[in-house]
Amino acid sequence: MQGIPAYTLYVQHTTFVNRDFIKEAELKSSQQLTDPRFKGKMVLQTPTGGATFSSLGNLAFMYGEDFVRDLLNKQGIVVTDDNRQQMEWLVRGRYPIAVGINNTLLPPYQKQGLGKNIAGLDDKLIPVAVGLGGVQLLKDAPHPNAARVYINWLLSQKTQVSLGKIVFLNSRRIDVPPVDKETAVDPAQLSNYRLYATEENMEIANRLLPMIREAVGK
Image 1: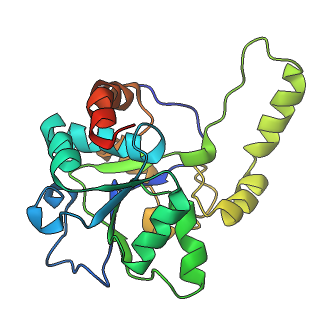
Image 2 (image 1 turned 180 degrees about the vertical axis):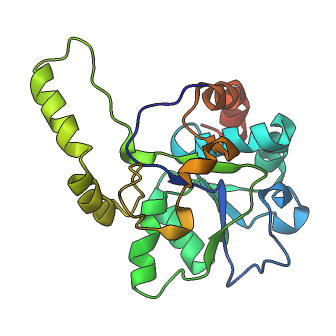
């Protein structure tokens, strides 16, 4: 399946855990999320769109749609519309497991010495995301030449180096060093990854959407 054109690419685990509260010996894989031991310990963003919606699509692809139904209906998951609140709850351990977080929100906490032991759970496949890095040139849009100049500047090596340091997301350019080595993607191993932004993933998530809305009352 084709994804969207993008200038960022990085490993994006479906789920993160605060190891200060739940050790690796207790929870290692996202496949364990439906274990009753973790009931009431999870938070996700409103799952009808965004990062959590995509994460649920990947979880369904890896473990089946019934897995996602059980996760949402049996695990007492807390839902927030505020992605910063979700990150803060994860960092402070109020809810030490978070599905579908925004990677860019964690570094500010870690610079303050908080959330140092937050880690991504192992996924059956390695999901990768483009985040805010999608770029498109619309047909018949005004000032197409100016847009092309801007896109060419945006995708240049120099701009990608500077931008990566600001947003703390890895560039897709192979001549730009990763700003986060832990989420770096190996260009030679792309066939071993699963992109969030694919038609297939959206089809799976959209098929689950009525159930998701019913489960979270949205």
